[in-house]
Amino acid sequence: MEPQELVAWALRAREQAYAPYSRYRVGAAVLAADGTVIPGCNVENASYPATICAERVALTGALARGKRELVALAVVTQDGGAPCGICRQVMAELGPEMAVYIADAQGRFRATTVAELLPHAFTGASLQASC
Image (cartoon, rainbow, N blue to C red):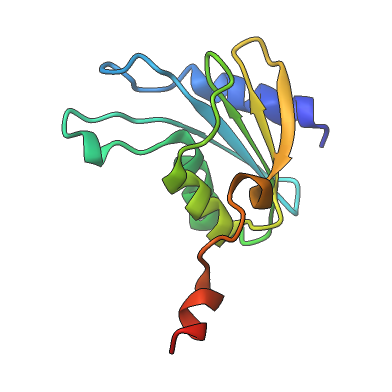
């Protein structure tokens, strides 16, 4: 799948965002190795810590569908904002080799990787090294 197609999935997912507090709507879409695309959108909550980001909705949705080989993730915000730290950590855990496309509301995107977004990530190997 071309990056533009995955970004288009994320753009459509962004339309479903529930963001009554910040009004910062985010859409994401993760591509599994078998070609399946799983969309996600941010879902805010009046109790802010209960909010879940679009990237984590898509990533956990992929796992819930039995998808364990994740190859790419697109995320769309109004201004092309990058994933937060928690999302970067989850990306490093579930799709460390993923390509990442960060786009604005017009679909203009830049390509990066999980490793570039979170160098020296804390992983399961880090836990085993400390035992």
